[in-house]
Amino acid sequence: MADVQLENGYTKIANELLDAIQQFQFTQNQFKLLMALWRHTYGWNRKECEFSLSFIESVTYLDRKRVNETLKALIQNNVIQEVESGSARKTKVVRFNKNYDEWTIKRYKSSGVLPTSSQSATSGEITTSSSGVMTTSGSGQSATHKRNIKKNIKYIAAANNACEEPTGGVPTTEIVQLPNGSVGQIPGNSSNAYQQIRDRYMELAGIGGFDVNPKDREYIKELLSYDIDIEKALSWLEECFADFKPKHSRDKINSFGYCLPKILDKHFAEKEADKNGQKVYQYRRSYGRSTGKGKSVEQAYRELEEARRAWGG
Image (cartoon, rainbow, N blue to C red; front, side, top):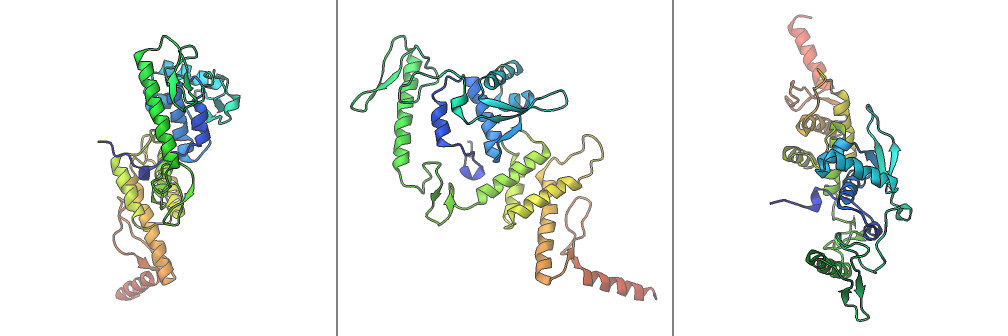
């Protein structure tokens, strides 16, 4: 059973954009590419990203031909904008054009409600009577089409009811003042901290997809259990990659478990230094674990002096 929780990360999309995109006749493949792009731009709190054909294949499960045709169509219709052209040595960089008035994708006929995915401009429209009841008109509608319309009506009704509920159960994506005093979509900041650490690690390690593996998820949660400062953790994570010296072309950091002890060493060294007012050094074994609580400069000098005396120096 899938364990889908907001605490594991979420992507912020403007409600206006979600409403507006329903007015356009996007194909299923175009929707898949847009969701992938949103996930890897807005999902990482950025406006543009590298978007290679092979990467799109891996996250949408479409074949190369479909990916190429779909991406080209979205760029031609000004839904996706090319920031940097791709080449044999350089990956294409794109961004989503949120100004939907500039899109040249064909719109559905105005009906006042969201069209279904199988509805075409000539297959009939959804209309609303004066009493507020939604009905369908037109001929030639398939049974699947009618079922989709009914589902769409239920979806709209549920969405309207959710918007009328009080915040706290997070029925909307608006920024609100929550009962615990925090401001945002979700109480607390643990999910945001997890997402920042995870996304930065995936970016540094060159990991595609939507999430890290289960082991790395546990490593990140373990790191956050130490109440570590998020900005320092991100900085130390970057230092971990910067200091890594590969022995060959295929040698790289494959697990957050490699970074975890290094970040914790810096965290506890800093805490001890703040406590004692002096710098603390950690001795480490080759596989990255601490061999002890660490020695202060004063203790190291004292032991060095004792050793000198022992040898008659």
